Image (tube, rainbow, N blue to C red; front, side, top):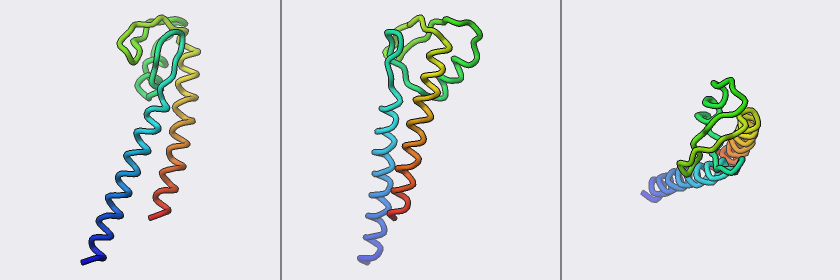
Length: 99
């Protein structure tokens, strides 16, 4: 019975650690740009990639429309997204290896 309890506890601890990591790296996706606060998600990257104009209005995390330089925001969002996802993947692999 103790063995089963330990396995359940270990599985719960692993899932809790994954959730903490997710929250940590989702928070790190948030950044300021040209007076607005943006989250470097794939949705933002796709939106910015789909327009051709140099400047565009984008609604930031606080629901405020912000006129931005589309290219510079796209570049910063891509960079932030990849940096944080790579760091997240490394920490997640470490957690998996500890099991």
